[in-house]
Image (cartoon, rainbow, N blue to C red; front, side):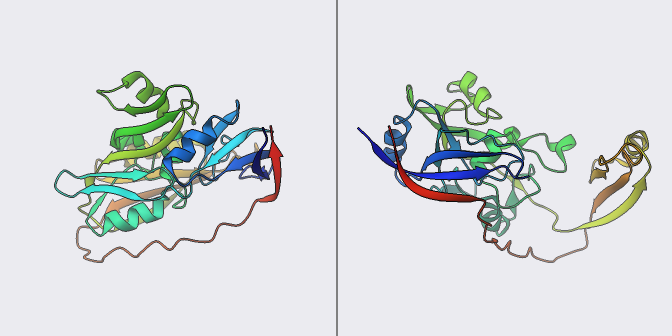
Length: 266
């Protein structure tokens, strides 16, 4: 029996790699079950902003979960939230920041999906202090084409829980995530920039400047040997005097990086 799929040519973020894939966009839980059983080679796709083409392969079936973007539960008292994996980071933050809550492991690009962040075990600029996104995850609902629906946490299916965070989608489809939230006590930083001449100089200055209440990171050149390691250190120090509210993060329209046709797949 043939099933109608849309066929796309997808490109990696740097456009150095492309593949022609089949894809489906489920909008119901039963469709995740149905579509997952239609192909031997299947992977879940988020916003497709990762540098590596981790969510697609030549001739494979990709499940795109952009329609799974709802907030399912929010408990202000417990500081917990459950969201679907297709929710993008900007919408997540726009909701949480109004309540002076967040997760401190914030990747640099605001339009990735939360499922993708979990699958990559993403981190933010303060990873030396707050670690990766794993430290904010309480539970995951996963669908596996053979083993069905699985609840994952430190108490339930811990081995699969550990493999799923940073597992690049290889353990199944991350459908929703429950996060432990942190209070956001400060709303603004003062940023200073310091020039560095090499990787060794950069490490030395970071060690000298790092304090508990600062967020410090660097940008270093790697485009040629002569200038390798040159760059800048950015140090963000908390401004305790500010009372400004956060501006809403505006979602930008994603530029299309694929061509598509309707076709069939065995």
